[in-house]
Image: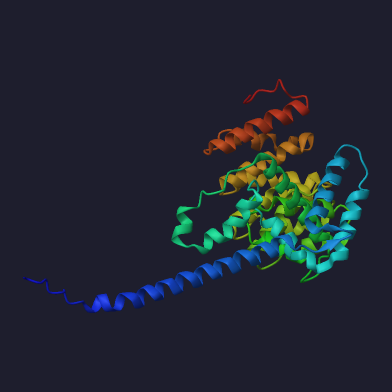
Amino acid sequence: MCQMMPMPMSADSHSRPGWQRKARHWIGASLALLVVAVGSLLLWWFNEPRFNGKTVTEWLDVMSAAREGAWRGGDDGAKQEANAAIRAIGTNAIPILLRQLKENPGRSRLGRLWEPVRQMLGPLGVKLSGTGMAVDPEAFELANRRQFSAATALLALGGQDGTGGERLFQWASARQTSDAWAAIEAFRDAMLTDAKLKEDLIGKLKDPDVGRRRFAVGVVAFSSATLSGAFPVVTNLLTDADGEVRYWAVFATRAAGRDHPERVVPLLTHLLTNAAAANQRQAAAATLSQLGTNAVGALPALENATSDPDPHVAKQAKGTLNRIRKAAGLDDRPGPH
């Protein structure tokens, strides 16, 4: 009777159990690390500092509600209480406040917890990038309110190096101006009553770091506080090496020189006529529009600008021209309409 001879085992077959053990070891170790990471994240997320029974985030919600109440004619007592609570918590609140600034508005808490885990998964995480990322309009609005409140709370902790105000400036300076609106609004509101903050901001307009100059001039551009001391510095920024700084500096000239239109109008007229960058010319036309009858002297330049080779500049110049004419009672004057 013929018997089948057993096939000899290859070297690869002998080594397979060892590889399997190693694979199981690495998988187990990876899972353990993942569990530790998620657990640490959960503890970090939920274990916030408290004052009078409320977490930092809950005090931010108090601040947001107080701000909305102030818009409706209420007092700001609750806002002052929330600011006092943040100051009582002190620098322990800073990581939570910065985290709120970094939130991606609209994601659910589960989605925000999932994001750092997804990034840890490498290529697999890239494939799962759309998971749990749906935008919730209510969550979006809540996150925006908390971002502004977090920025305001950081300023309440003070502006010296290493404390809240400086940390907020560092955070905002590392971003494009359009991504730092919460910080811009917080600085704008705080400067109405904080003279020291205004002085610090004017100093940062001369900072060698372009990000810090960019954020500082953006704050000035949207400021409603009196900043006449910033005017000479802002005019220097009109020729800054950075295009975004130059752009925001156009708007900042009006904010810094609102009490001296006789200085602002010739400067804007010069920019409208001579600036090489189209966005600066457009910004000059838009800013002249805000000056109303004070800008009547710019009408000839605006008429010429309606033929600007850039269609956006031409459109803005035409709109500004008609607005100033109407304000000055010159609607029947010949020219573009």
